[in-house]
Length: 98
Image (cartoon, rainbow, N blue to C red; front, top):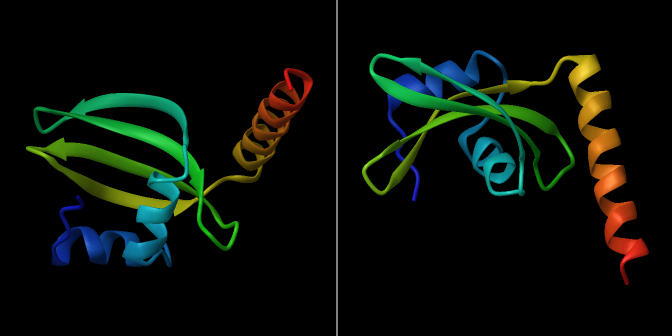
């Protein structure tokens, strides 16, 4: 499902993020932030959580049927607060509809 090589592993490692952490955040029903076109491909930026509740921004693109994570990095404080508020409101919405 994921496309890793030395380049994107090293880029995420510069931010102290391991490949499995980036994958966990990507698979955690992340919140979509935005996208940009770079090097002729659409790169999406999302924020999600690892299994240990680490909140990461993940930049990814599709390469065929595989997800290529370009990089992943810890959030900025303001973004973390917005993400947590969104997740809380999302949970509240689910509870009130039960």
